[in-house]
Amino acid sequence: MHHVLLAFGTRPEAIKMLPVVRALRECRNVGVSVAITGQHRQMLDQVFEVFDEKPDIDLNLMTHNQKLSDMTGLIISQMTEVLEATRPDLVLVHGDTTTAMATAIASFYSRIPIGHVEAGLRSFDLSHPWPEEFNRVAIDSVADYLFAPTSVAAENLDREYNRRGRIYVTGNTGIDALLHVARQIDAHEAGGPNMMKTPVELDPDRSLILVTGHRRESFGAGFEDICTGLARLATREDVQIVYPVHLNPAVRNVVGARLSHLPNIHLIDPVSYVDMIRLMKRAKVILTDSGGIQEEGPALGRPVLVMRNTTERPEAIATGAVSLVGTDPTRIFNEVSALLDDEACYERRAKAVFPYGDGTASTQIAKIIAESFSI
Ligand SMILES: CC(=O)N[C@H]1[C@@H](OP(=O)(O)OP(=O)(O)OC[C@H]2O[C@@H](n3ccc(=O)[nH]c3=O)[C@H](O)[C@@H]2O)O[C@H](CO)[C@@H](O)[C@@H]1O
Image (tube, rainbow, N blue to C red; front, top):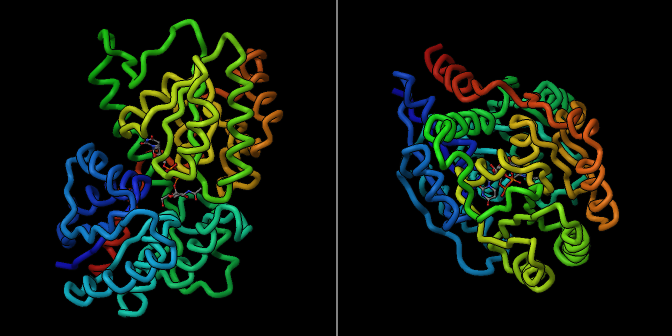
């Protein structure tokens, strides 16, 4: 039996790694354990519930207003202790978080092979998203298995001079998670009175604009601009805006002060993953700076406007489902209005498309790992 340790700490990593945990449990020659750092403590537990899983090791390292440098140092040292005590045959990390980067370094120092799920994403700008773009490059340079979600990501990896790992194109495990939960919602609610039960009371006569925004590089002026754009959109009588606001005070304080008094803007706490999918299904347009939502919106047939100037996910842009609008308030207002006011343009951009895979990424990854152990 070979031992695979999956390590993660934030909500999006849990969403995208728990399908891999489940797929690996199906492999007879693989033992699985999950270590969490608790980088997003409050938002992590409900994702484990959705997938009926529990962490084996909880480092619980998050403290209030922690600096990135302190968190990185702590994760490297604590994760090294876990690795030395358990000596897994492979450590799997996901994406571009501090947990993923620090765990990859700890594994590299302990000379334990590393697999990177969602490898090869690049914005080619180290300050956008910050610090995630650096984390991606750092993890990919030490990983042995590079699970690229798309051929674009694989080509990015192929060009890197310092790559030592082998590249596999698998699709994105986030689509596996999305389709799993969307099926559960549909099965549970088909035809029933709760069909589109959302965490806020919605006006059936107004179009729903769903907003998320929390990237560090937009803190300050960027968030002020985003709020100006949203306040302007709220002057339209045909819309209602729902914004689950990230728990980071740098986001909460600005958004609360600028938008909480507007009647057709609902600022709510972060919602569960299941509720988020319900809201996305109900939304007319999604405005976001999130990575995962750029993948989920197109699969659900919802146009996504990205409040950033660059993206590491060009595939959905090529389909027309996603576009970059930056944080300029006039641009945000105009681009959302264009979608709301021009039906033909909306229909073109609201078709379900699957540039990030067909929902089988996790089983492909588990198969590759299990087969490599039996060689
Ligand atoms: C731009 C960027 O650098 N993003 C990275 C970040 O995630 P990302 O930017 O996707 O992180 P978010 O915090 O936006 O989380 C997105 C996920 O959380 C869900 N959601 C969102 C709001 C809410 O209230 N409730 C809820 O459940 C969304 O449906 C989505 O599945 O880490 C991920 C994990 O390694 C990487 O894949 C991404 O590349």
